[in-house]
Image (cartoon, rainbow, N blue to C red; front, side):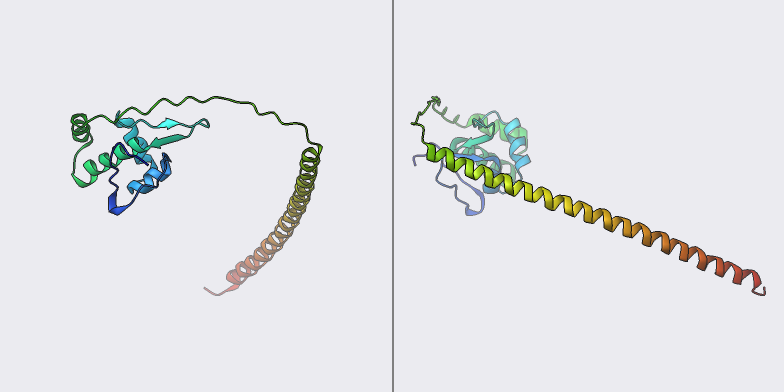
Length: 178
């Protein structure tokens, strides 16, 4: 894979050979927490992640290289945020990634009864599994109610025994010579 910018990661880590990385992957490669990557993204205009069709932040290789440089400036070279911004402004701007155009296509297939039958069978199987889980949950809830009732009875019996013992101790104290 051709790289526009070298990616220098800390502690000899290497970036996987792919185009985009999720924020957790970027944080792991840089040895920081994901909230730190989000903070740097907000502070440094040079870091431009993209959003996937599902709304996830995806960092391309240029953004990863820029974040690695920010980490080096802040952690290894001791720059402040303002100092790192100034240093980065004097470095070459990363090349703008090519615009990606998504084309939606519709694939049509002839109707196949075997697929529909298989899907219905799987749906029935899942429905039976769901009903089984619901029955187990109801049994567990009933069992929990029975245990709670037993605990309440034991608590009442223990309370009565403690009150009786306390009454006996108080009676002993009243007759005890002072």
